[in-house]
Length: 273
Image (cartoon, rainbow, N blue to C red; front, side, top):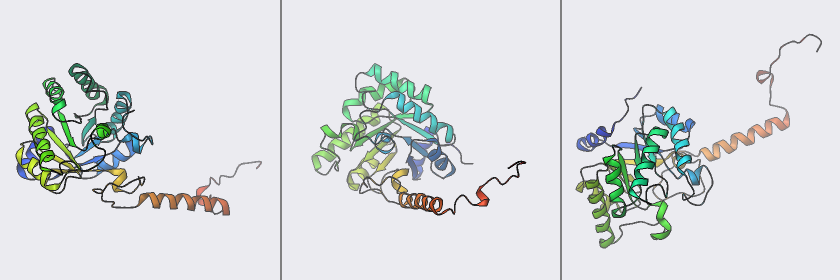
C-alpha cells in the first residue's frame, strides 16, 4: 500500500527534484485503479462536464455536482492526494463566496485541497482561502472556464509579452500562498522559466518536460475518450476500440447462441421441470 502524499510532500518533491504525477478522473471505479497505481495525486476536474456529461463546456458544472464526484473519488482512493476543482462561478463572484465554496468542497467532498483557475484577478480569493486554512492549487495558461473570453483553446505565452504576463501571474499566486501551480498549454521554455522562478511545484498539462509534475486525464491516456485529442496527450492504449470490440463480440455470441453457455448458466435440477 502506498503512502499518501501530503501538501508538505509537494514542496519536498520539488526540492529533491522528484517528479510526481496527477491523474484526472471523476468516478469510483477509475479512482480505484489510480489508487492501486504509483500515481500520487488525483484531480477531480470540472472537465467531467465534457467527458461524463457530454457538455460542450465546463460552465454548467455546479458545486453539488463537484461534491458528488469528489466524494466518490475520495472513497476509492484514501491513499492518494485528492484535489477538488472549483467550478465556474464558485469563486469569481466574491472573496467571501470563494471561501465558502472552498470550505464546502473540503467539508462535504472530503478532498485535500482545491484548485482555482486564474491569475492576477483571483489573487485576493486565493489568499483568503489559504488564510482560512485550505490548501490551494493554482492554474494558469489555458483556462477552460474562461477560454471563450481569452482567445480559445490555444497555446498561451507564445510571445515575450504574454510569457512575461504568465510569469507575473505565477509569482503573484506563489505570494498569495498556492501550494502548487498547474501550467496548461504553454511553450516548454516558458514553463521552465516559471518552474525555476517559484518555490512551489509546477504541474504540467501540455507545458513540456521541465515542470515538477505531470498531469493527464485517465480517459484521454487510455483512449476511452476519443472525441478529440489535445497535442500534449499521449495515448497509452485504445480502450475505446477494445471495449467496442468486446460489446460487438457479446452481441454476436448472443445472436448465434454461443452465449450464455452452460458455464454461464445455473444448471440446477428442479423437480417438476
